[in-house]
Amino acid sequence: MAATLGALVAGCRSAPTALDVTVEFGDHGWQLTRLDVTLLVGMPDRVLKQQDIVSPSRPIASGDDFVVLLPDSLDGQPIDVEVRAGDGVHELGAGSGGAIVRRGITEDITIDLGRDTDGGVDAPPRPDLAASDLGRCTFGTTCDNGVLRTCDRDGGLVVTTCGFGCDGEGRACVRPNTCPPPPSADISAAGIYRDSTAGFQDNSAGLCGGQGGPDAVVRFSVTGDWQNVTIDTTGSSFDPIIYFRTQCAGTDSELPLAGPCMGADKTTQLSACSADVPASLVLCGLPPDDYYLWVDSSGASGPYQLNVSLDPVTLNSCDQAGALVMNRGYDTTTNGHADNFKSDGLGDCAGDDGQGSPDAVFYFRVNTPFKQLTISTSTSVPHSIYVREDSCSSPDLACGLYPMGNGTLTLSDLLPGIYFVIIDGAGGKSGPFTIKLSNEAM
Image 1 (spheres, one colour):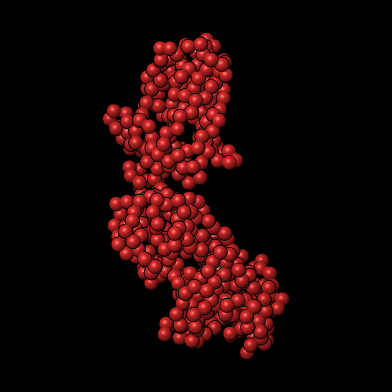
Image 2 (cartoon, rainbow, N blue to C red):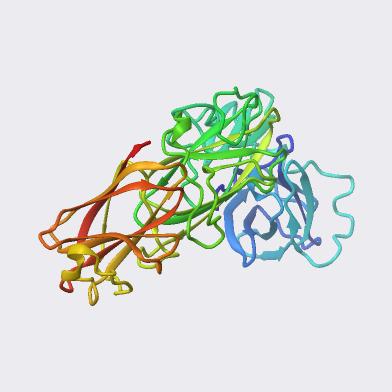
């Protein structure tokens, strides 16, 4: 879960998103002094928070209530509250029938612990649990798991869910307004991220738009496995434009958009910039590296939502190919891979077409013609490099065999399109290697 419960309090003003829980029970004559509260969220239920409330100044009375402050990120999710009350000997317990959390709304829940009427023991009304110091907030600002709690001198509480956590001192939310984004303004894990561009400046624009609108930028890091990444803005309060870069402030570093994975555009000559409604990007086989996602518009601003999903790729088939970003080298391996391909045996590849050896598959997109492009490998493993256009089953454009290890294959006058690079072992060999793509524009 991206955010956790801010607090269980009583005696403070209602939080932007909260539950107001009233406990009721019969007149059993027990002096209940303790409530054990458990919050369950989602389907199936997951424990969100467990907390004990102790009232040392007076017994807990039927009709007492407490406020459960919730992060805004729970918007639209079902939540249950289970309460057990006791006096050290006796114990009562029950749960709510469930409620749907609504952003900015305080929902009222009544939990009947006694399962019978209390005979009017609460008339006239007693003060609620806030009559003691229980839950009274302390002046100042604190941050707990991305939930900022600011208490004024009168004990009034304002709760803010920080989309990207709190700053280093825990006194304000991280606001990813410009480059370089703080490390905590990060969407590298799959999930839902919410924040706002309200009050931000117009620092950037993408190749598909964004001039004149406030923008925000967050970091996206791929570590370990190469990943298929899908990002969309469903749930935003306006129509954001999003674009994805390898350099935070570099307009010319937007990635080529087309790729071979499921859901990706196979033919477009555009960059990774979307002005669709909702905006959406499918980025195939991203290699381990740091990237930057901008949330922008042509004028509007406000709360936005980023929905991120990840799917690791095997680098061992055409639709599981890894992307090669120009002029960056990547370490990977053919160990553990299947033998899915063999070359056409062009030139010196006639000496070993790769049959019987594990292989790895990569791709790159050419949006504008290139005069010269070079694929280089650094390894001690005998291998071949061959390149195919449009699909893995197309004829080889070129092939090079490197029985001593390191290899360099140069291609000339490439037209726009998708190209697949296959690194194939020679003599049944497999192992680690570094691959790099470099180019010279026309």
